Structure formats: C-alpha cells, structure tokens
Length: 256
Image (cartoon, rainbow, N blue to C red; front, side, top):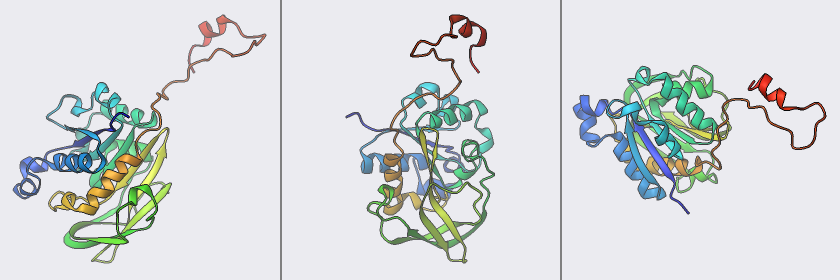
C-alpha cells in the first residue's frame, strides 16, 4: 500500500525575523510538524513555504501528489496568490484533505471553504490552555487523554464565526475564562477540512506530544477516499437510447 503523501505548508517568516521563534523552531515550524507527522503516521512528508518556493510551494504537480495538506499561516495571509488559493480550494473539493492550524483560521482558502468571516476573540497573555477531549472514540482523538494542558498559549475565544462543524472533537478553556471550539471537522466536496487551534509561534506548542498526536491522527483521518475533479459541468451522452438526443446537442450546448 503506497505511503500517505503529506505536504506541510508554512509562511516561514516568524522564524527568520524573531529570535524567540527561531530558538524554539530552529528549522521552522513546518520542519517540526513534518517530523512529528512522519514519525507518528508513517506518512511521506514534504514541506513548502510562502516565499522560498515558486508558487508558494503549491504548484499543480505538488497538489496532485499530496493526499493531505497541513497549513500554518499568521502574518502574511494576503501574500498568498488568489491563483494558488483557487488551486488548493479545488483540490480539497476534489478529495485532498486539509488540516488548518492556529492562525490559519484567517487564511484565504479557509475563508473560502467555510463561506464565513472565521472571526474570533484573541488575547496574548502567556495563559494556560486546557484542551478537553470530547470524542475519545474518534480516530483523531486516539491516544489523547481526557484533557491536557499547555502552560502558555495565545487565547482564542468564542464566538468563532464558522459553520456548525460536522464533528466537534475538542474544546479549550483558558485561564482568563474564555472557551473555544478548538478541534473541528467539516466535509467540503470530496475532501475533509480539519481545524486545530493551538500553536502560537512564540510557544513550543508543536513539541507537545498530545498536539503532535492530534495533528498526525488528523492527517490520517483527512486522507482522501478518492480524488476527482469536480470543476465544470460537462454534458454527458446517454447510456441508453434517447429519441431526441443527437450529436448536435453537444455541438450546440457544450458545458453549462
């Protein structure tokens, strides 16, 4: 059976501009996530970045060779070209899985897939986050305890302006009192979209064993059952004889 093919995408800007971030993720957030996914899922993992790779590292051939795309973005959502956004959006509708992390809630492609503003409350105050496992029997939550804590995180609070999740797997409580739907799954076309909240760049969140387990499980869960383009509306010839059907219909009408 061929290995699951995963691409981990990262802006890779904070690590180059901020010494604190660089000390936590010396090879980039994408490298830490990629290593964890490869180790825990057995997937074949590549990485891609916003500015260092042509087409943001997401050329058509890359997406065709990707079963699941993991997305980390924060400060440069606007730099992602609309052409690449459309390409990723169509890949998800066609069956590719998408795992969106932390501030990826504001990514163009996540907005397009959700059809909402994806807005939320936030605060950066080095506060504790307690993540509660709501679905211990779900594949994404295998190996995850009843709850776990992250000693320092950025707070995200409700209301999170997204459509009602098809599956809500975890909620977070923050030291300041807010709660947040931190792990959600939606079906979009043939593809699954997973959103997982923790992961502010100045904290070592992606070194946490529970966080790594959830991301690796999410990648496996979001793997496509099929890949098929859903773009366009081609006219189809009938399987059986239809008296009023002729080749002139194809010539006259083409696609709708």
